[in-house]
Image (cartoon, rainbow, N blue to C red; front, top):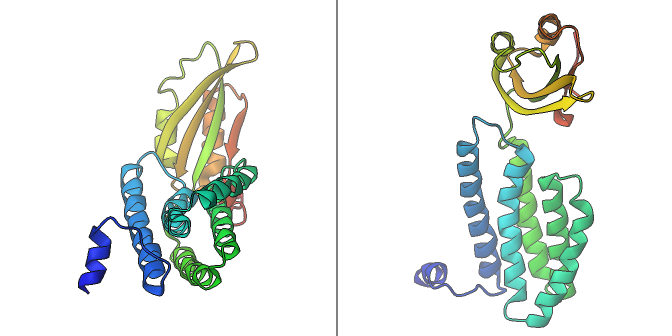
Length: 233
C-alpha cells in the first residue's frame, strides 16, 4: 500500500506492469472525469457538446498510456508524432468523441507494434469498459435538445430584443449568437441558439415569428443527434 501511494506522489513514471497500466489508465480516467464535470458546471448556461465532454474523459487515459509506452525512448517519441499525424484526416468533421476513438486506436496499435501486446489488450479492455459506462449512463446527455434558429429581418427593423417575448413564450433558454447582413445589406440574419419547452410547438413559434419579421425567411435547424427522434407535428 505504501508503495502504491508513493508511486502516486513521487512524480516518477509508471512502468509496464499490471499494476502500472491499471494505475495509469484508471487514475487518468478519474482526473478526466473531474475536468469534464468542471467543464459541465461552467458551461451549463451557454450549452455544451456531449461528445466533447466524453472526449475529455477518454483522452486523459489514452495520453497516459502513450506516455507509459514512450518512457524515455526518443525514437519511439518521434515515431509516435508521425503516427498521430494520421489523426488529422479524421479531425475535419469536428466530433471530439470520434477523434478520441481514432486516437485510442493509434495508441494501442503503437503499443502492439512495440511488442507490448498484453498491456495494449489490458488498456483497451479498461478503456472499452469506460466507454460503455459513459454510453449506457448517457453521460452529459441533455434532457432537451438545443436547436439553431435563423431569422431574416429587414434592415428597417430594430432586431435587438424584438423577438424576446416570442422566444420566452416557447423556449426555456435562448441566446443570440450571430448577426450578419445579407442581400447586399438590405436584410439581416439573426442566429439564435434555443432550447424548446416543447418541440411540438415549433409550428406555432414559427408562425408568430413570421408575423414579426414580415414573413421573411426563417430557418430552424435540428441537430444530428435528434434527427431520428424528431418529428414535425
